[in-house]
Amino acid sequence: MNKTLSASETRGMFGRNLKTLMGEHGNVAELSRTLDINRTQMNRFLSGESFPRPDILKRICDHFGVDGRILLEPVESIITRKAGLRQSLALYGNGYNYHASSRLADGFYIFWKITYGRPARAQSILTQVKTIEGIKTFSGYMPKVSGTYFMPSDPRERRSGGIIFPQQDGFSMLALDSNSRRLSLSFMEYGYMSRLFVGASYLSAGGTANTVPYVPVVMQQLPRNTGATLSAARECRLQSIEDVPDAIRELLLASPIHA
Image 1: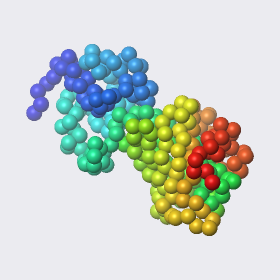
Image 2: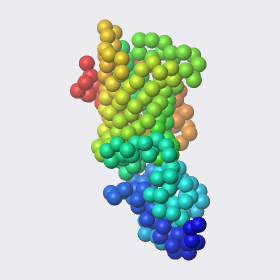
Image 3: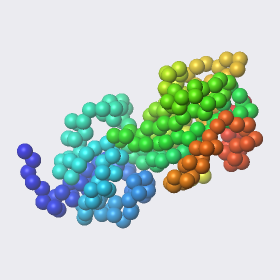
Image 4: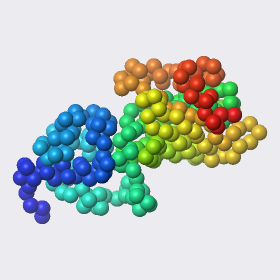
């Protein structure tokens, strides 16, 4: 049985665990912004001066995929006993890049891309980024008309999503649609014009007379309010490249891979 910790020991344990979870080069500003926690308060947690109230503790635990034992036990022992995707990823190389994951905030985005089958058309897809047990995931719904084919009317059959692999200078997104027809892999760069991430998307199916295997893409972060999200959702569709907002269109067309 673990000994009972004093208040100061509990604060110290939590501070050390939080530093471990953030990694050696953890960025306090990025993590504070991602979790919507005052930066000064975050520094107090890290230094062992205070520990969080229950709602903030839950926010931190959900983000890193741990539980309230980080107040009482070294986090290494908690992670060792917890099985799942995060631990599986840790078997390869340096494992999942926890520090970099804080650079991509949870929330809603518009995923813009020129279609694989119609270079003069673009898709916009409302996409949610969400951290589940310490792993960044994303999900969204394809529009009913997508590229050179029509999607099912049932939204559940148009749902796609996957996992995000944070990297030092960007992130990769591995996506699978609901019917497992094909995979796509997107590579995005961090921090272009603050709320825009630019990259390319590759399709597992090879190019044909009507399709190309890779296209330019842009992820646009939406403001954190319900009105902006609902408004953006109503505008998501297949459209002419000329109808895409100017800033997004310029980035798509300027990509080196644009045909």
